[in-house]
Length: 373
Image 1: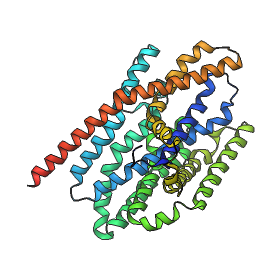
Image 2: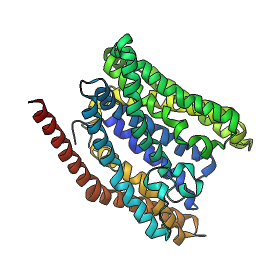
Image 3: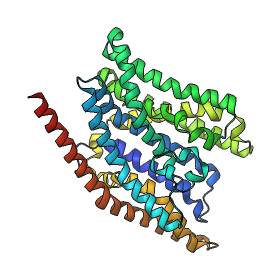
């Protein structure tokens, strides 16, 4: 197992992928109530956002505050785009072949979130659109704000204030949109790019805490109180979610679901990420044989997330009106097929893309070395 991997974060990735799969079990008649388990899909995406913010935050902050931000940001974009784009574009082609539909042009530039019909082509891609536009928009804005603030405040305060501003802007837009435009809870708020960037920025805040307050972060993060607060918060939101469903109330009529929910849930997910990354049992768990399986499944989580809806929609057609046991067999077979295809995508697409990425990054390093001689 790769010694650089964090088993706690790997467990979170696998758990989030499982929540998404369970959420989409509605393709099969397996007796799982989609209404009450749909919260799992919502939670999974917020966990992925928090993880992304934490993992890219370190390189983003280092790039912005470093002596040569232009070159550092170039490496940042090479790293992130070659990690994200190849498998995504292949899935667009596969979906087009399977569905017999043309690929909406908006999908190529991650603008499908602004059209419900375009988004229906590959529904799970909405979260990728949020992440992609985070990569496009946030680094230059981060650099600009930091340069404006660092002269008077110094590096640490300027970074924290910049993160605060970049969290406040999407929150303010979400609040104004909810109060003025009365959009739908799911499509109109949850999946709109400008309104959700703060969910990833909260993860970047964790990266800043690790960089500038590492000792304090190391004391707080592994504490049980951090886990309990996260569990209580997520559990409370879930109970509220279920109570709202029981009353058959409309989420679209509630300002809470449109504004506060998408502030509180990412916050509690960040607390969960803090604990899982720094839990004292991480070191012990690495020696357990099951840790290798968790690590392997974690590396496939991106592929599983992209592929599973396509697999479920195709396979479920052969189990329409099937008996309960048969539907379960189809559901389990779909999960197995999803994992196998994700493994193929990892070996044939993600690994070669990573090698190409590393090659380009080495070239950039050599270019920098030559230019500095």
